[in-house]
Length: 314
Image (cartoon, rainbow, N blue to C red; front, side):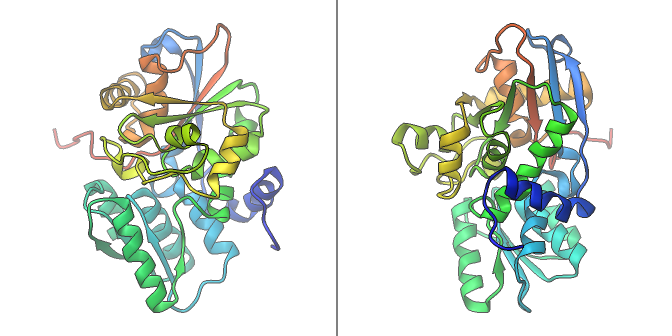
């Protein structure tokens, strides 16, 4: 495809390539009161209904369809969702995959990876440990490394979510997005490019983008909290940061309690089962950490649903 740039043109070029392999996930517009918030209509982008349970599948296919994959196959380090996405994409395309995850990955994510047939390696306490192990494997075998967020193809794939959302809800003023390493918010911000206000939402326990904005560059941040398997790398991506610095309007920090409350509210109001990282953006609205202006039209990305939060055996 030639050189790809992380901007609207790059996203528009990637979208038709991955379209046959991804779902056009639905949006739901509902009154704020139905979800327990003092706001008008809220538009939810239900990306948890994507293949492999999260938005990560977009970036996975963008990598595997545009980069040369050697005989050794592909490798990825992940808190869980990226690994599940790469494993799904590799299986769909008939490619071998080896996925590295830390011990904090949720059982739901580990089981989803195993079901794809990918080789799974569980070790270390945090994403950084899995990444180090993955880098060692890539150096040894020559496998293609698919980075969870700090890769142009990854960001472009995630940016197709915003392209899709704009076609479904063109009237939005603001979009709230959960942030880990920044691949999703980087892609979304690159697509909207200031035409819509993009707000990053992070757990207080892992404020990677917030710390980077304070320092003016990517810096190490804490890596704890209930969403640590999806929103807690050590720092925001080096490729991500220039994009978000230019196009992300603000950040909001939410507590673990607020994230749990958001999971409960999404289930009570819509019967949507979101994982902690998937519910973080909505937690900013529910907790009041982001307060829309009167008449402001807000969209919220519900980014993942790989959880065992609901027990259907009862």
